[in-house]
Every structure is written in structure tokens, then in C-alpha cells.
Amino acid sequence: MTDDGLRDAARSSPPSATGSAVGPLIRPRRLRRTPGLRRLVAETTVSPGQLVLPLFVREGISEPVPVASMPGVVQHTRDTMLKAVAEAADLGLGGVMLFGIPERKDAVGSGAVDPSGILNLAINDAVGEVGDALTVMSDLCLDEFTDHGHCGLLTPDGRVDNDRTLVAYAEMAQAQADAGVDMVGPSGMMDGQVRVVRDALDANGHADVSILAYSAKYASAFFGPFREAVSSSLEGDRRTYQQDSANAVEGVREALLDVEQGADIVMVKPALGYLDVVRRVRDAVDVPVAAYNVSGEYAMVEAAAANGWIDREPAILEVLTSIRRAGADVVLTYWAVEAARLLRR
Ligand code: PBG
Image (cartoon, rainbow, N blue to C red; front, side, top):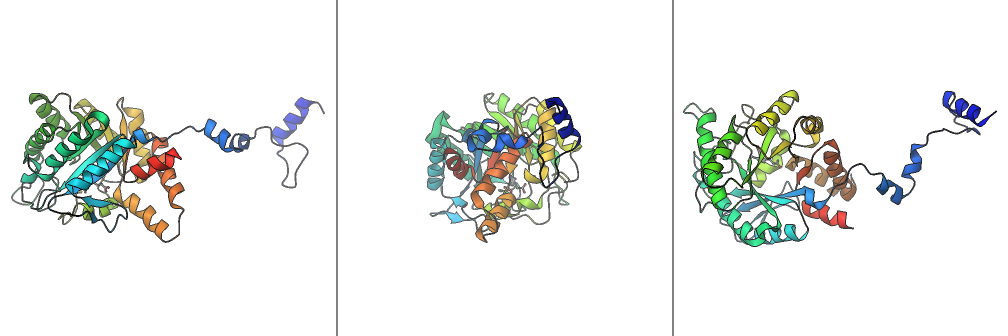
């Protein structure tokens, strides 16, 4: 047989399991043979600059308080938060996302707009520590500050009042910008929130403050450990404002609306159960897309690893790579510091 004849034979009849003189013509395994080859053809990379570390800062504590459902994660004091922020900058992370846990909560979340509220103080501290070396972001939502635990203000009959909440978000945006934040993260899923936040920033001399919009945020059981991390007082759920996990088209719609309203970055959250939404949003918008690798995703891997059921470090890198492969430009993850170290090795 001629060479061409052999090739035709190989194409039409693959070698039997017992082997054949004629092997497959196409061998994808060639590019997997060595670490060097695998590195050369890797389609997706994860680098520290794409990772954002969420940090919890709690008012009125003198030592960090561990979050039991998130081994390795703590509620920081103002001091230990600063050390974490400095470390994040040293490692070249993309940023930190700050969450505040106030000592006292009330129906309207007053602590969120108070310049000496814990989150606003923490923003000020963090920016003072790292300046422009690291992007300091803050959660813009009322749930940590309200005694009922909802992301917005309630009507007398207990429903979340969209438009009154927007007024509060505008004030909160201004307070966070006054404290020096680089980027605000409106996460309450109120209709029109990005527009209201943009207007409030622009009207008060903060046109340079950018918006990371939690655009496609789903009512998710995977936020469970976070509720412990922020000492949440929520009873019930957030299904009248966060999205239904059944809906992907609607996630794209939310992202497009946020871009129209002035979002600089749009986010999908959670990440792992919603990688299809990450991809669809990436294909639909022309701004950077972030994904939030949430508390429950972290807790699952940590719990399995603690039981010896999963190999922790490769699992962490696989999770982050998968989120990037789905199309996320930026990943919020509680593993940001550790992943940065693993990636340096
Ligand atoms: C709302 C907010 C939540 C998370 C981030 N911002 C909780 C919620 O919507 O109930 C969840 C993050 C996580 O689970 O890691 N302020």
C-alpha cells in the first residue's frame, strides 16, 4: 500500500484494541506528553491579577473570629484586615472586596451610610494602606446592616421596596466614595440600582469611582456559609429580588441592563453552577465579566479536602481555571491569596 493508502485505511478503520501496524493519524495526546507541552498549548490561564479577595471586617472585636463553615476565613478586626490587604497587594492580586459587619443593626441599615460605620472606616483604612497598588472594592448592599437581613428597605407589610431602597443605595455609594473606595459593588439586585449609583457618584464629584455590578445574581443555597461570615439576621429568602436558578436568558438581560446603566464590570454569581451564564454574558457584553466563586463553593471543597476525599490544591486550581475558561475575566474567590502562592510555584 502507498502512504496515502495506509492513511486512508487508518481513517476508515481505526486499529483494533489488540493493536495494529496502522495507528491513528491524529494523536491529540502528542501535545499532552510533557509539562512543557501542556503549558505551551494551555488555552486558559489564571493569574493573581485576575483574582479578587473578599474580606470581612467586624466592628467591636479585638481578635479575628474564625468562620466555622469556611475554614481559613475569618471576620477581621480593623487591624488584621489591614495586614490582609497589604498581603493582597504584595501578592499582586487584582483587588479586595470589603464587607462590613456592624455591632448594631436597624430597620433601615443606618450603619451603611454613617461615615463612621464599620465598612466606611474599613474602606478608608484599606485605601490608606495600599493606595493605588491594589483596587479596593466594597459591597454596596444593606443586608449586613439591616436587622431583618434583607438587601433593601421594607414596606409596612414586609416586602422589599425597590425604589426606596434605591435612595438608600445612592447615599451608600456616596458614603463609600467619600471614604475613598476605588470600585463599588452594588449587590442587592434592585431594579435600576446601577443607574442610581452612577448618578449619585457623578453628582458628588466621584466620576472616577467605578462600578462592579452584581448583575446576574441568583437566589442560591450556596451563599449559606456567607450568612455565617456576615452574622446575617435574614429569615426567609431573597427570591423576590435575586434570580431564579432556572433562568439563563434573564441573566444576560440583567447584564445588558447594567451595561446600559453604566456598569464598568458585570458579574455572575455564584460561579460554578452558572458557568453557562458566565459564557453567555461574556459573549453578550463588551465590558469585563467577573464571576463570584461563592462561600458554598469554597466550603464544599474545603470540607471534602478535610475528609481526605479530594486533593485540595489541584481542586482549587481546577475550580479557578474552569471559571476563567467559561469566560470570566475576573474571579472573586476566598482562595485568592493561596491561589496566588500556588501559581507562583
Ligand atoms: C449581599 C451578598 C451576599 C454575598 C455577597 N454579597 C449574600 C446574599 O446575597 O445573600 C454572598 C457571597 C458568598 O456566598 O460568598 N451583600
